[in-house]
Length: 241
Figure 1 (cartoon, one colour):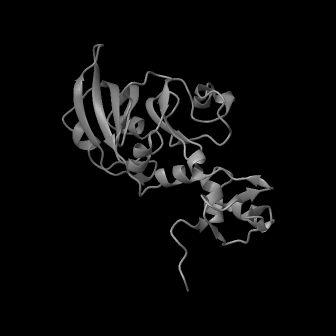
Figure 2 (tube, one colour; figure 1 turned 30 degrees about the vertical axis):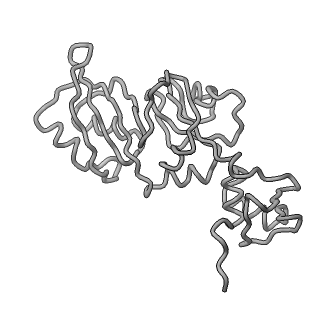
Figure 3 (cartoon, helix red, strand yellow; figure 1 turned 90 degrees about the vertical axis):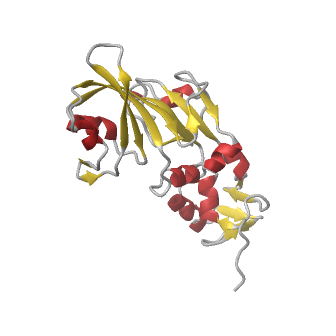
């Protein structure tokens, strides 16, 4: 059997990449006969070239990958949530005027955390980027208060059990004393991002987090971005991620 060229992909993946629907919903659209390729009703399992074939859903053209693969780096301010629910407070999506419903965050920062946050309207890209196998280092600058005992850094740099999950070892180091008495600034480097992981790690060694800023994600840093500002990722940055 002749193999499909590399540029031909399953239709459900094409639709997910274009932000039309998640893969399971895309399969439903195909089964219902709402998807066409070059004017013919598509079949489940069919492949197509999104750059050269005309793909439609309900007779509306599916945007080509170049139009759908947009990703942004945001300097998330403190006090903003990563959901669309206004009931939880101001959302990061309010910082993107005119953003459509397909814009999503790739991972999250809690309401009281700040710093580097990725967003995209490409569901397939977000799925790949947030997969455990895609373990980019994330660096955090954390202001804490409490007592740094001799065992503190040994515990922070070792695997810890949080909510029944055994974490991978982090890299934690002392940076400098804080601007207020009793406060210190630490640097955390993680290759995973469990829910409120750093705050829970600090709780286990009797440290209180006063401020938490994610300063970088992989090769991406906050350079040139003030809180609330964002920029589009370049093609080279997307390849690196």
